[in-house]
Structures are given as structure tokens and as C-alpha cells.
Length: 229
Image 1 (cartoon, one colour):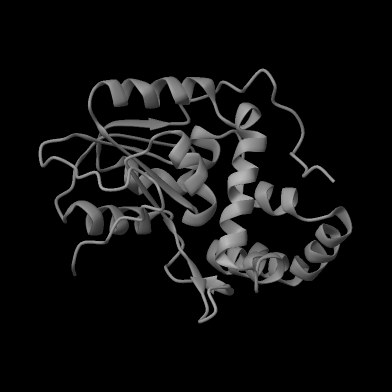
Image 2: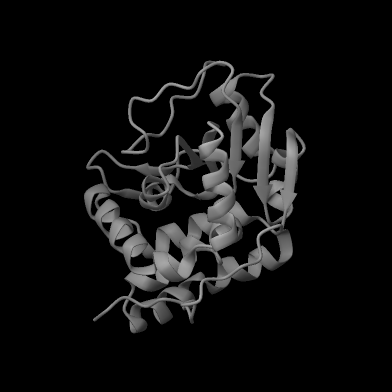
């Protein structure tokens, strides 16, 4: 299997990792951020009535999830309900606006300090997330991330969201699969940080493994963000 081409989209475009450069991998949702970013994004962009209707449409998938705990199926259902047919350019624009709107109350100060510490140490900093790469990219750019590895949305021939994913859900063992695809089969991380069972396998290939080590919340943190009307 060949190396996975990095998802750039303005994330450290053109940068090349040195062979001896240590890798620091960070989960995003709940680790760098205080909550799940994808559901927060979907809620932010949808008018209240549309959100309620969408959640009603998602109810059957939610019931199935209770039985089989299939996160990928539930997430795909959410994409189909809330994003299907949306143009790539509009999605990217909305994701950028969302990141700008929530940044100050969304990011954990202690996680950002550790992120900066690894940057000052010269590490290659990569975000490894189950959330869509397209919606995390604006956060990755603000963080000056060297690379972003996440779940990739599928787009149709007209460059609109197809309502499903191009790749498997990037959690648990899939995070290791994607890291090996990006950095080689013998990849060893200098550090990895996460907050859930979906990060365990990634932490197992790290010299410094931090599970739920970031606890700080922004002073301005509040209820789930809503989009200005």
C-alpha cells in the first residue's frame, strides 16, 4: 500500500517532514477542543426548526446505534441528513466561519500549551480525528498543524457532498492504519494525546501517551454555539 497523500487544504502546504523529525499526534474532539466539533458545527449552521426536523429524521439511526454502537453508520446518517447536496466551496466557507465563531470558547488552554511546546521542540504536529477533515481544516490552519488526518467526506461529480464518506471512520485501529499509511509501517510517535476509547490504539504506538490529560476549559466557554441569525 502506498503512502497516503496528506490532506493539505492550506494546512502547512508544501512542508516536508524530516526523516528524523519526531511526530506528536493529537486527537481533536474532546482533546484539543472541549466538545465534539462535528455535531456542534451541524447545530451551528442549521436554523432551529431545521435542526429539530433533522434530529427527528436521525432518530431511527440513533436507535440502531444504541444496539450496534456503529459510530460510522450514525455519522454517515448525520452527513446525509444535514449536508447532502452542499457544495464543497460552501461547506469550506461555513467551516471557516464556524471555527472563527467558536475558537475562543472551544479550545482547551492546557492542550494548546502542550501543542505549542511540541512545536517549539521541532516536532511534526499532526491532528488525527474521526471528524471530517473538511470541517477540522480551519482549526488545523489556525493551529499551524503540519498535517491533518481525519475522516474524508465523499463528493459527487458536481463537487457536492454525496451524503457518505470516502474513507472509514478515523477512530480506534483506523487511526493507526492512517498513521502508518502516512508515515510508514514502523511509525513510532514521540507523543499522542486523546480522550476516549477511540484513541487507545494510537496512544499505544507513542512514547508519551496522554489519555484525558487536558482538563482546562476556556474562561468564555458557554452553551453549544448557535449561528447568528
